[in-house]
Image 1 (cartoon, rainbow, N blue to C red):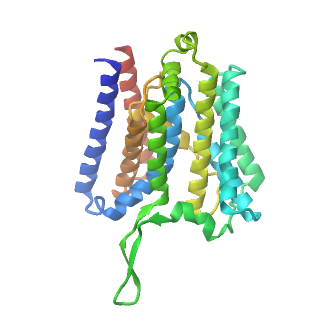
Image 2 (cartoon, helix red, strand yellow):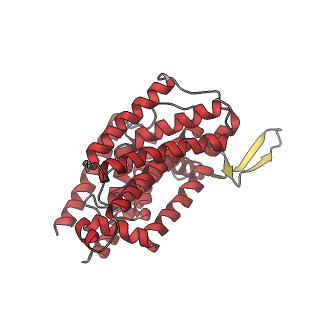
Length: 327
């Protein structure tokens, strides 16, 4: 079995797990397999999916990024503060994206120029970004942002509403939430980048064998730097969308999100050793986590037990990945 076959095997194993979970929870609760709950799950999964796509780029290149949860919070509060100060919403969101990209740039330079281990460099950024988010907001939520700020996170495409006989609006179709559409567009764009471009091939080559890539003339440091900047930019985007959904900016948002992002990538077949990973697999992994949480919530399972279950799932998938690498 070659690398591509092993990658497809793990991806379809994750897909089979997703279908099995859907079947089990649908049988356990009639309310699970409904259009409304499906939209809810898709909306809940978006943050994990965004960050998971960024994590896939970094991990495929042989790195790791532990800072995305804190960068998410920092970018979100910067966007909110800019909007509350009077900036137009697009400009405020742009400020959040810029902050995310700058954090990614610092991570990338720490790894490529200072030669720090990615774990240490991004762990330091996690602490710095979280501290900055708490400092500039004085650890308080940023409110009073207006309806325009909430549009990106709460709007939807194709919503159909009819006035009922009782005079109240009747929602025939809730529409596709903008965060879900954005998730699809981001997934397609990054998937094309990884599979159809020279840069994508370079990312895979760097993760597969860094020294061989360097000897082949690939600018290893530039490629590595790109993946961290992209991860930071995507974390900034996630922060803007998430704070828009909440209509307030919480400096404590994003706690442990980096672990969910890495878990989604690994469940979908991305190898922690680098060189192997797909965006479609990461999306499947994100939905596995989202459906698992949603189904357990509907079943009345406590949040503590959910953490145990998801932790065991991560442990199992990483063990499978290690066994695959040894073979």
